[in-house]
Image 1 (cartoon, rainbow, N blue to C red):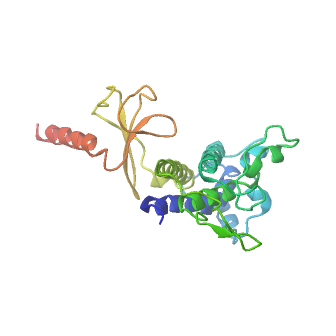
Image 2 (image 1 turned 180 degrees about the vertical axis):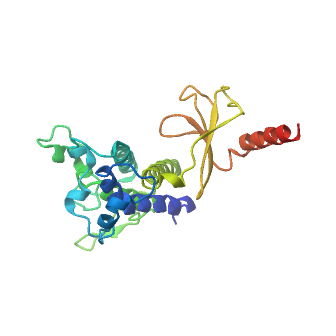
Image 3 (image 1 turned 90 degrees about the vertical axis):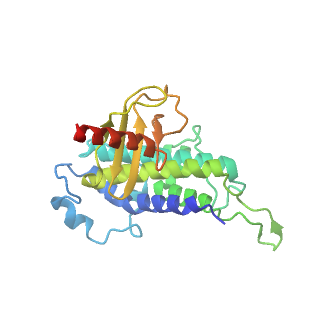
Length: 264
């Protein structure tokens, strides 16, 4: 049975897939308006273009495309970063649990720098973010981890092993980070800006910031970076981060100071 956290991670991956078409459209749209979708592109985005009927070219990896003059650099940067993170995560999970043969359609193929073309060198990355996200989702849900019968009816070993818990947590971190980045581009008004905390980092004394969104609990991050030695997790940039509810003591200290200031 999949770990309870796997279903939340799968939901983040589905969010990325479902919003990918809108993100690609945003790359070609000037970020003039704070509302999404912008008025000038709303009719284009509402013409029935869904995850099911995206063109093959729309699924091509951003890293394999030309981007001579993107109209929204933030959207392009987000797309490239999300692709890289999900592709790298698929590499990591495949190396740990994949046993299927290369001709199995469920198989994830690594990059091959010596291949004659860029698409061939990309391996399974050439199929785009959608396939990578589907592959990762299948691994975190422990699909295809039981022995199965081959074409001759013989029982053979499972094509994948169950995902170790530490990799499930890594997949959860990456999927959450990627989904948040996509949301920030497509719905910036729904993301609360980072706010500095008066409380210093309990480990290094560096500055702390808190970020909270209407649909997500707050997260506290140390701005010191990789040099901070706090006994907590790291974000994709290597900074120490306190999720929920680990960040409660830091936020409680801020609330206590705010209360003292009001009573003075």
